[in-house]
Length: 365
Image 1 (cartoon, rainbow, N blue to C red):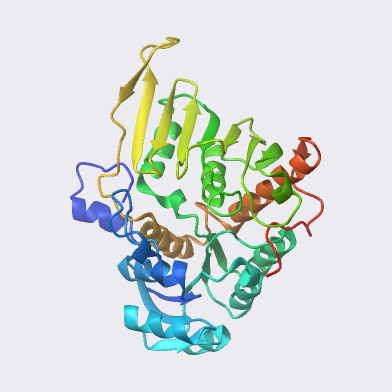
Image 2: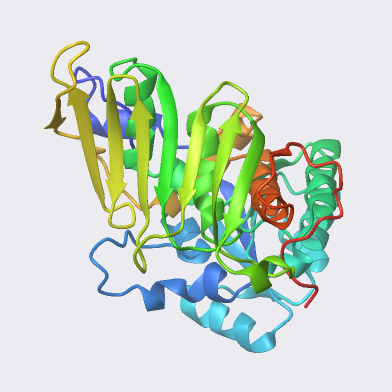
């Protein structure tokens, strides 16, 4: 739980008030790394809030019961069943939906087949889809997924789980209260590629900006990579329709991922891959001097993926998704493509949305 707590309410009641009120059946399509095993790679990392994998996050989330898994790879499917004690295992997702009637389905397949899977789940009547990033390969695919979910009244959420992470929730609340003045710009220092890990950054910045991106220009790190279709790293400048501006800087140290939220009278800085947060405020109105204050960490901290899974259940109860809807994932992909297209044009300004929806980031493999 990350909201500011009313001290007059007992802690157990305050926590319960933030949880889903119903119980929802959950399933995972794609029982490999992100769906099941990524936590094996993270043991011993001090900044790592376990779990990140979707299956154990569903098991840890209140109001969600993991009931089934689907994968075309029998070996991955068998491992998934052994790890999580799941008997309902399928190689056909439509058969899984028909037999198990899941309310929430995590889609952790490769981006190549993501659109086909999401559309099939929406057509089958699944109430909520939680799809990992990057959302897909082309803007046309993103458009089709969003349209299918709208048509079938399916909640469509992108699994950029930092949007639910407690410190970022508290940072957004701090800015919303006006204590730092209006949000002016957002900065990311990270060498990560644009469509993979920077999808997290771009979805997070979209939530903080509170408005769609309207134009960009970009400079890619590798000329040969910029001429191809694969994911790539590059720096860029993004302007949102409300005037908030973002700088992506890939000339950063290896494994660095530092974010800055710059307001009129202060700033919030996230360091060490979201493990350490700083709050800086003006010493006095109009003063050029800033002092560091205690950042308001969540009083009930948890894994961002667990909070995200519960958030999907809450979105079913609310009838809409606002923290990271499918549109945020599409915009992250669109910005990444636009930054590359800007570089291809010699650093020209590229307006959004892009008219050519066939543009791709990622090969057809």
